[in-house]
Length: 266
Image (cartoon, rainbow, N blue to C red):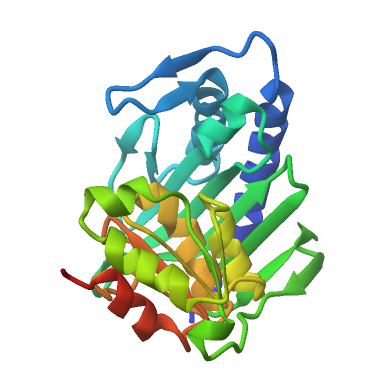
């Protein structure tokens, strides 16, 4: 098993720099916000954080490729850093503290690129989560001050807590009836949104979550944190990993039932 400790340490350094940049502009009255072609917002803080991370990676890992939400793909090779400078930009713009910088290292292998390192840093919440392949998943303030993450052992949907982002995406895909049936079958549902429900699945405070439409940079870091915590992370089609354009995450015990509800057809 390769040792990813140096890469994980670098990812923390990158997250520290991004945290300083994003927090400096959080709730700024003169924050500049633009609308991208897909009608989603982007702020000067998104761009600045990604530029900062790219600059440090180009110095520290010049042979590695970089894929980011704001500036696309740069470079080629078997190692690729995947960056979402602010996951939860709409929250960031409105002053809601649920947003994070997502940093992942992916390596080429069987089945294409797979995440081997992931850091999810949410400075406005004072939280950070991370994982490396084969090394487990953790949360804490630093590599040396951390708690191991483990998914829950809830095995019945009627005892399970479900996290999601919104209803509109499920409706757009014709999956709303199945999703609503799922919410009725679960003990509790909450629309936490974005990266956070995946981290709560990893730490065992939620049991399952799903989203109908996502990009690779939304999922690469969260996927390895969930799986290294003992859970499952797949597309809605059941394909493992962050490549399906959507996501389902669970403690593993409830995963097949989760997919069953979300793939119902009426």
